[in-house]
Image 1: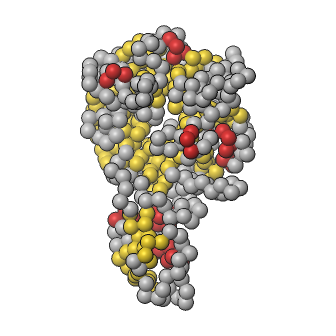
Image 2: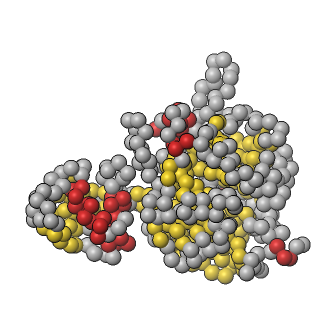
Image 3: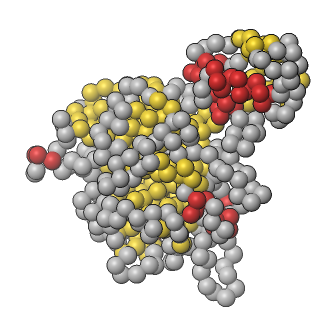
Length: 92
Length: 385
């Protein structure tokens, strides 16, 4: 499965400022959790920065599958799907 | 004067709302350099050097977006590595708390050179046995059945979250630990964190109704900053939401409100508290306005440090050099520090991003850096060279 991922500037220290990438994963089904696992392998430390110790998306992080804002990691991700992780607008 | 004891250089480690900086003073107390930022844009709640290993530093780094972490430097802040296992809570029963930020860092006992402790928001205590690279819960506290009652509910925290702070390792006994919780109170362990008990007798709790039987609340208090004298470890002080207190452990376990000796128009509310590194009778506080709506500013907009040379029985106002009016800043709980010079250096960081220093024990003050972000912590690192 090929998944397109867009990452926010807040994660530059972990990604080397790579904002867009395509993950090619040897699986037939995939959830958002699986995408994060793949990102963690590629960018160690990234997962805990966007998801807390109980697998909840952090309060000021938003995740989209396609155009849909999702709230948990069990959401299925289709082949050819797009994932976008966003630093939510918050604070001053 | 013992010249041999004087450090060659003093560096202030400064954590702010938007990153960290280092301010270095020479042995002549002249400003050498201000370096930074480090971790620009991140909240640095605490930035501490290991007195057991000069140049080894830990920094509590948080971000509104990316959650809590701890970074480690082995070269005095030149380079940083992120903890591979930051503090994180395991579920306790049906409760699954998540660490919002690491608020406090304390090096372990001199006999345990790789041990560090961390206090978090919401309240939790963590320990590292590898110099801060990985962290484990102190389950004797975090998973204790009574801990839920001790730390209270959502209404019992500070405006930016309830905190575990003032982690103290008794220099005379590695197994003796104290912590403060806002809210919750002061608690101590004599078995390195295995078991805990409250230590709050005599402390006012004006924000709760008095008990009908006239007895004291055992916990639920709001200590802001707790200190133990580094040599005379029986002497404890703390600045509380409800006053300034002292305890002599060899004479009992009841806190004495020494803040009653402060001027009435100033009161005895504040956040930070310092004790002199050699003289247990000399202490400093920075009062804030805790009247009415609790503006948490300098009283009347006139900043001043108050110092006692007799363990809090009397206090002197020290405001020489500070603005004389219309200065509405205050000082957070880990934003005052003291050095080891014979002519004691006292330092503070303000809510409007200023670093002030005194090189005469607080008698007079001068601005050292005036345009940093809001200061969250100030610690001293000294180099013998």
